[in-house]
Length: 270
Image 1: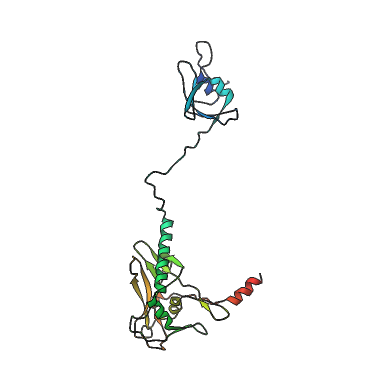
Image 2: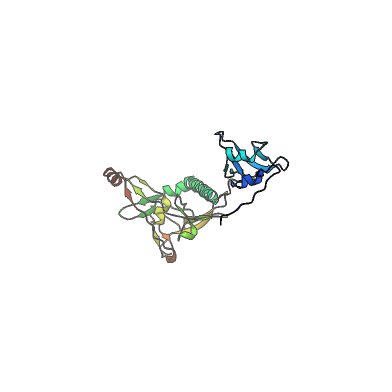
């Protein structure tokens, strides 16, 4: 048996507008688009009970049209997506990634300032760094206990929970493990390295043999605290620097020495 759809007729025997639209899948509240090519879009607001005309709203204006005209001259379309704007209480800086990057940037600025400070440079200048055949660090001047201090500088950081870090920096919300910076040596003997990591590579588990230790120090004028290397004993010119790290804290330091000339030849041969 074929399906039967009942419709309502007006006094003249014509199908009422509501049923005309319904037979074409259109109802009040739907959006329609003109077939004339004008790209006019309208919304079916209602059907006038007195005239049985369909009331359309478009571009802030409204008008009446017959249901048959809609079926012949318009197509039903999906509802347009309404523009969505941010509220007045918006805050574009509440991203966790933004705050993490901001904290790292702030820390780098602080470390660089400490690294270039005159007092720090005085300590660095008093160390003779030997790269080969073995890594050694020898002081060329005398220092009273805790007078010699070396601060870390590196762009390599990791969340403290993800690394067994001996060296770290933290503030109220963040704690980063500071990771070693690779030593790079070119053919002429010039090198790119950070003194802290070269000194930190020479460690011992014997506290009696060591003359350096780790200390947590607050950075002046900030909420950050960082790990620094300082002398736990008096130093005299010619002393070899040796950092004390308890056995449970021993972490393999990977200081690769990459020769620029070898890299140049490798790259050139590709």
